[in-house]
Image (cartoon, rainbow, N blue to C red; front, top):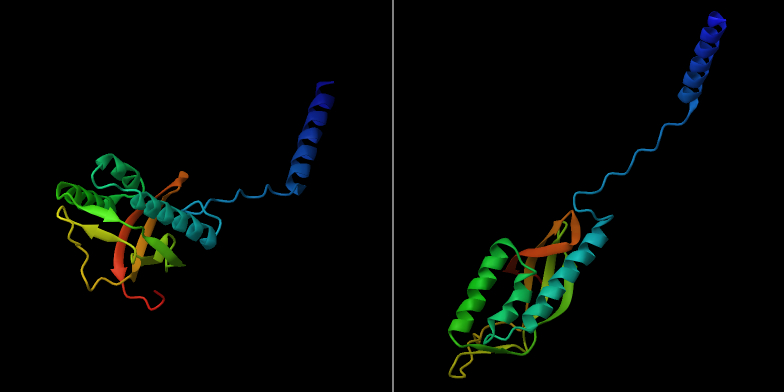
Length: 173
């Protein structure tokens, strides 16, 4: 009796093993990209959205009210954040005012994920000191190109922040 049970058990184990060997292997789970985006186009759209939101916040700044700076800072990190804090704080201390809005007529994908070439139009923007004198250089171009880097947090795709913004020459702007 024990020999029959052992033989039956051994046969069952052999059958299960043989059937398992014939079963298709489980499909490998896709691994997320380092940025968490499915494509370069998706990453570009997220970077563009972040930069546009940053400019929208910047357009709402009232230099007489430092509380209006905080929404701008929320879109920045690293050197871009440090530079913006220094600039806005100094403009506030000097009693300057800003009028007009910056617009973004065109944004192009850069060479790397999160890199943008931004055409920025400041033709409607004036900055005046406490006495009302314009602080805008007469040689300032109305439209210029910026090389912008947006960094993504792979754990939260809504946590993208601008980390670099530098004027560059680009014939598209």
